[in-house]
Image (tube, rainbow, N blue to C red; front, top):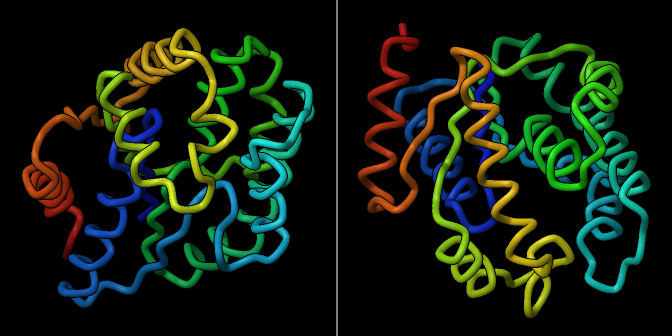
Length: 207
């Protein structure tokens, strides 16, 4: 089972992924908990994360896109694919839907242009379920800036203008209408209430 959490900045993806992993452990389900960009399991990915998110980085939109693809190719080959092959559940805080929305829509690179390259980087490995955490942009950015211990004052993406982040929110909601694997959750709710919704949805997949 491959589960991803997606959404804009400060929507609570990381918290929900961590809470889900603890619940799976309580159910004696073998899993890995990972993230994009920069999974802690792969040194190359950690270096790419620094390049992408450091506020001092100055890169073109296409360069940013290719760095995300490089991170994902390593992530899939070194973490996701081996875990799935071994029968483990994979929980990932972001995956290719973020690239579709952030670069395809937010940066305006276009879905038709980027989709074949995303497929190549992921070896067409699709999540079974994607929870999209939806929250008003102002609330999400306030949360993100407050909680970011990695880059004081926010990372390079968090520092983008409000119009960019509104485009992302609209983009995630648009993507959510394209496939039955998407589950949109109101991320304004209490963190435990959201976790309970996630558990309720996943119980049918636990044998």
